[in-house]
Length: 132
Ligand SMILES: [Zn+2]
Image (cartoon, rainbow, N blue to C red):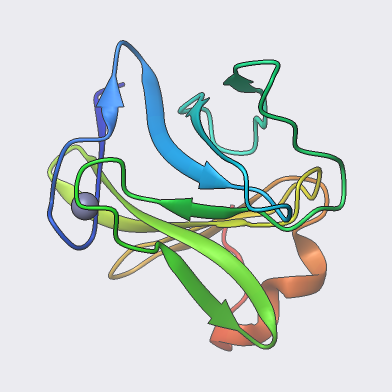
């Protein structure tokens, strides 16, 4: 399936060699590069072992091109927001900034999808139910 991911601010392409590339900062203020798989709900992240992110820690994500802070807050929860293009349609992709929390939301003009086992509790802040 053809997918592309880009920054909502500079529209720079974040999807290279089948990975989403983001700049991240952990709770201790350490910064590093993180590569994410494009399979929504799959949370395997590739990073240098010296850049430590512990389960439950909040992590900030930034565009590696324009350095914009990609955070959005919904109901006191913090998410990272990037854009996805798939089959000519544009979607917002939100994922939790808490390491180890598996919740991803994909929001299109006419669709709302949820991925990840920890996602259910957050589904009502758009006033919509997920459609599978
Ligand atoms: Zn950017």
